[in-house]
Length: 366
Ligand code: T4K
Image 1: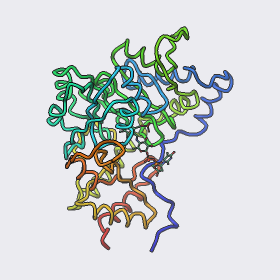
Image 2 (image 1 turned 30 degrees about the horizontal axis):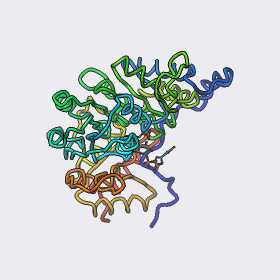
Image 3 (image 1 turned 120 degrees about the vertical axis):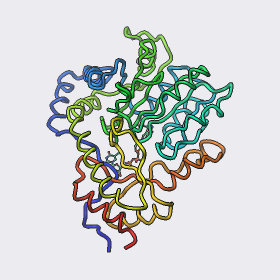
Image 4 (image 1 turned 60 degrees about the vertical axis):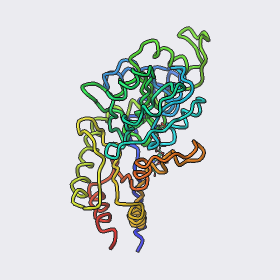
């Protein structure tokens, strides 16, 4: 019997601030008539995010994808960029859009992140950088990756699209590597509808990213560099500012819901979880691994019948996508892609919904 009277439960929903708070911030933009071009709300958002995250140089841009492209361009990367096949398409497509070649390295089965032990065998004289992803906000093995990068004179760009508000060894995870790119997409833990940012400790690189996102203009609007349009608008910055006020509440809520899922699903003998460090995690996703693909399909079908829509992030593993590269086997990434399911986790999800979802999963055969 389909449970279609029930409101659909999607994998996520944006964490929305009260509309009145967003409107109040927008009123300022209406009075000023300034909607874009590094307006006061974008400047305020960058300042407030730097202060909240304890970062120095955060440049807001239009999306996480554009943040990755700007990072690649700002570092003048060419040739091959080593990355993971277990990620969203944007990681690889940003590399290709910048006319570089993504070279995949398999991931670790427990953390889901790039396996540093397998990186060196993929380095050639054409390699210019390593671009790892903190998958579902779980920090990569940053020390091992940096050691390899230093040894081979490679740049490091972190794709931290999932990893806002994560600290690693006493500082924001966004401060590692040459540049980190993050996303403020509607489905992310901190959101401005669409949006993202590049973060770097290097002041010159920071200035370059700001020029590149604004047609190559300097502060005086002279054209001094190549450039594109990667500017965040005041409308998006206003939503970011309104969201930022609520971020601690959102993080606490996620953690509680994650723990509820863990306590209910932890009892099952056919579900495994990602191995993460609890103090460096933002609970932005709820990935679980089933025994095999058939089980994932059976569980998904069961949930769909009850109007619940989890997602198979990240399937397919990107090494199997013809449009990206010639196929090369990466058994761990392919295995994860076949067994993973991301369960619903968002601010307005009720605890009773989680109990209902876990009950359906545990009894999926009934
Ligand atoms: N690197 C990594 C590792 C990434 O995961 C991503 C993006 C990027 C880079 C690039 O960042 P951006 O350029 O996107 O800033 C989503 C997001 O579009 C994408 O941002 C995200 N990763 C990816 C993992 O997931 P879909 O295809 O799942 O979106 P959609 O429309 O199916 O949404 C999922 C569910 O969310 C829906 O069932 C309903 C709900 N939803 C969605 C939207 C857009 C809402 O309730 N409201 C909304 O406005 O891609």
